[in-house]
Image (cartoon, rainbow, N blue to C red; front, side, top):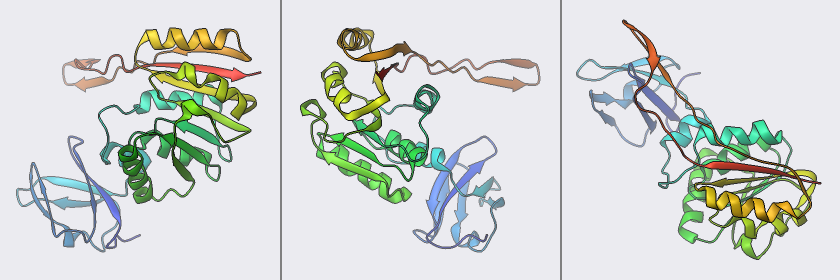
Length: 251
């Protein structure tokens, strides 16, 4: 399928440096390795190699969801893929399910949830209008249609009923556990992301004497390896602690 104006494309150099563009929005892409004439890409097929005026080569492909999330405008604190992937692994989330989310931020987790549960709905609660507007923009530009963002405080309650998952990225998740019980179907899951262990302790205290089961907290640490001529070893730099993930299930 040939590239057309208006399409979003991803350009990747031999070292993995990425640029995301929309064909037709500008005539040139200025990179660390020179300038690419974007008109030359129109009509080409995925896998086409665009060459800068300095001779650096970029492979041109269509971006997937994770490419888009990586390159979209984000706030400083965003749940990373290594952590958000644990939601699917620990809750069995799949297409057709309905989710309530709180703390939408820039919409990165919202987009991932929307792609998984479609045609189910992801309803997000956010109290900051600037965050809500940024998330709406990112979600709209990607093309998701199953997201609903409410400018509403989830600490005050949850309107939805019989949902499959309540996902929280909040300073005080313990204030939402009773509301989550009222919103979840029996067997539905609660997920909470917390940067500090003190938040986890307070959350566990709120779950202990209520109608919850299968309560657990995990941390996900990913270590990437590099292959060089002299041998293979872990990369020197890595992302250490990002946050704790607590899961619980309604009886």
